Amino acid sequence: MEKNMPAGKNGSKKKMTIEGLRELILSGSYGEGDKLPSERELTQMLNVSRNVLREAVISLSAEGMLEVRDRQGIFIKSLQEYGMMDAIQSLNLLPADFIAYQLEVRTIISVPAARLAAQRRTDEDLRKLRDCYDSFVSCPYGTAEEQVQSGKWEALLHHLTTEAAHNPVLSRVNESINTLVEKNNAIIHPRLLHEEGWMLHIQRQHADIISAIEEKNSKMAGEILQLHMIESAQMMSEKYPSFVAKIPSPYWSLQD
Image (cartoon, rainbow, N blue to C red; front, side, top):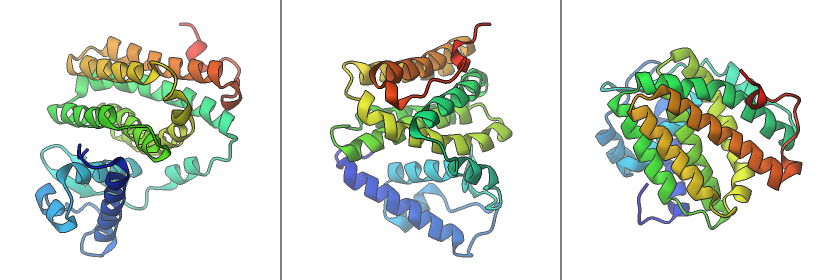
């Protein structure tokens, strides 16, 4: 993130960059599977910094529109693969049910993914994780707009962790899950961010997850991420019980 730019202005730049990339993709100049211009060329075309461009590319990658291939560039994915994402986004659940069930699904998927990421991650994966983490930590969260942006940065951290597992089927599922994470964070972040010590705690957890992935410690990466998910569910249940539905035998309560 551009350190000296207010969160609101940076958020607007990112939104404009996303729309600019969409227009470029849908202009007819490029087809499915085609490679987009280099990062340098795109920053010049869209008149944005490399950091803002990367944020926009990550967002469109999470939606399934783009694919970033290590040492190859940015490619357009098939636009005919939105069935799963549309189905998940159209789920009609009460907020309390949504928070509980999406946390359960994310725990089932993301914990093993983090363990795989620790074995399969590349140097480029680590760079993306560190850049995203730096932006997450530096993002203020005093206003409602800043809280939304903070939640999006954390959602991207989860997304990039799963992407580092380098499983194409898992990546397709992850594109849809990322939308759920952003929706979840938009609901719970404005509440949990102001719990004393909570923000620093989750920042440390994410730093430890990245360190475990860097050190290729699969067991630790999975354990810390699972603890992060469980503690989030417990904190919401204790502090804001009306926001998290009680589901029978949640996954994180099952014993091996």
